[in-house]
Length: 208
Image (cartoon, rainbow, N blue to C red; front, side, top):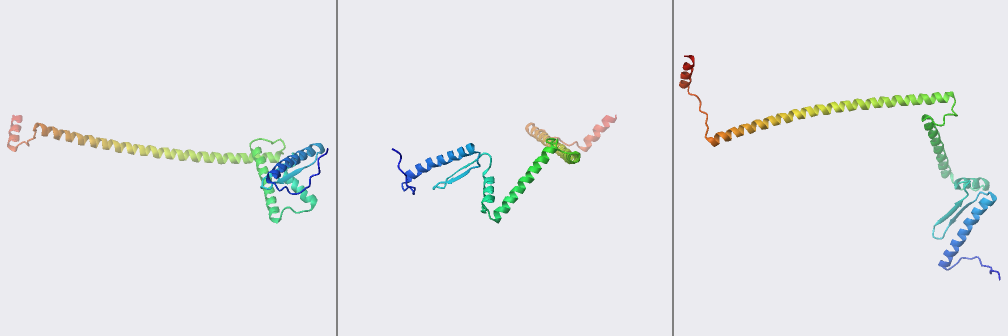
């Protein structure tokens, strides 16, 4: 016996509703893929579940954005307001500008230059030479700055070395003085000044 006809209405049981959604969602995606392959059709599918989750499919030959643009043109329905249109145009402009810069960068690296004419090649050469001049100037500036810094470091090192030597000499001198004083105190040495009359006698003996 054949299956009975199912009445199409909202399924009240939450569990049954989830199961049915899962089965029919998979069936829709499968059918969309099949018609894409079998009929070479452009197919886009977007499904929003009751819990807010999204399922989408778009044929490999066209992205969803291009698909929506084509739908807007053919149906005459405006999907975007003026604000979004301007934003879309700005995005397209930035993409084109980025592609142009990427191409220019490849040319400067010597890539994809077969399609360039003589004038374009000369412009690329001029840009490379101008860039090299700037690189050399900056390199020389860095080298000069490094030399100045090295010279300053050497001068600071020389001054610090001299100061350390002076401090070492002062410490050594103070240490010797303290040792001599301690020695004199320990052994009772006391240096007596030479009396004037004794000094005269010594001198006379030396002269005789």
